[in-house]
Amino acid sequence: MSMSEAKKKTGGLAGVVAGESAICTCGLGNGLNYYGYAIEDLANHAEFEEIAFLLQYAQLPNSKELEEYKNKIIAQRELSENLKTILKAIPKETHPMNLMQTAVAALGALEAEKEDFSNQDEKIIRLLGILPSVLCYWHHFVHFGKEIDFNSNQKSIAGYFLEKLQEQDPKEDFIKAMQCSLILYAEHEFNASTFTARTCASTKSDIFSAVAAAIGALRGPLHGGANEAAMGLIESFSSVEEAIEGVNRKLENKELLMGFGHRVYGLGGDPRNALIKVWSKHLGGETLIFKVSEAIENLMKEKKPNLPPNADFYSASAYHFMGIPTAYFTPIFIMSRVSGWCAHIKEQRANNKLIRPSSEYIGPSPRKFIKIQDR
Picture 1: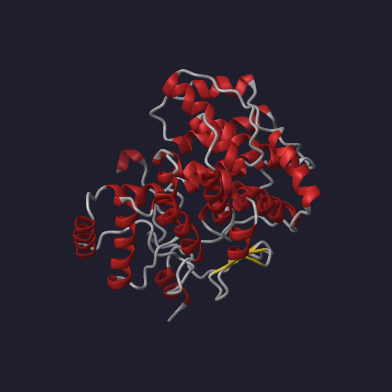
Picture 2 (picture 1 turned 90 degrees about the horizontal axis):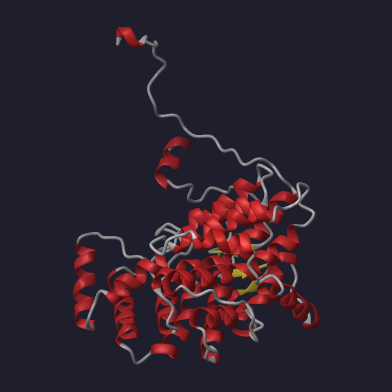
């Protein structure tokens, strides 16, 4: 097989090594690791802020460092009056991912990063602090005409987001489930949105532009939007029997089922799935939603063992059991993955080379131009 034939067969750059990174490994036979730490250990024993610190500084914090880091993030929750004005102008019919992208792009204009990137770490902390505020402020304004404040006793991003979204103290189990989800989504090597962020950063663009570009890539249903699509699938069935019948029909019609399969994981499946499933079952194990989810998973194991569920499948129901609107599932992904994107932006900048791949031309052979009057 020629090189060009091999490329055509893999498609979508599958299997192509596009650069070096010390941040994450996934699908290499040892599951998912952030800077060498297994995702199981991180998800079961750490807070999201510990993982955000790890991704930003390449080491886990001690207790004092974590407390200081949290306080810095808390101090960055406020929205400026200019940003509030922009958010108020965005109609409620807008997809929340476009809202989030607009807010990040606006920050690039309102709170620009220094040209030499010397304050990049400050901007990363600003993004971690402000993104939950952006979504919650817009949500309450466009749906209820109310402007929320940003005061909270919640020290974690998970607790703060849940409190501000629902305007009540969140249940401890909800905070723990959200912590787990944020950790699982924080980083995933050269996925589509991360590679987009690195490509943008490789041009020496600012951090807000790179993150806004990444949000655009994450919006699609073949990437971050898969959790919304998975919820739509689960909610479309009114019984376990209907779900089995419906999924069988979709398989017969060769329809794509969101929440199953992953580009980099083999038959062992996505290690994040088992971790978030524990929380989905804990929060809603007796509900129809969970029973339908598990029935679909079991059917897929039987019919399509090469397509195990990925992190999106049970994340969808876990968010649902916390009372989070489906349209906000992927914006939550942003609140987490911004930590991974920014880690990659920093790494790209540290040893930068412009990312500019080539393509294999398949268009017409050279031909003579014909002037318009002769065509």
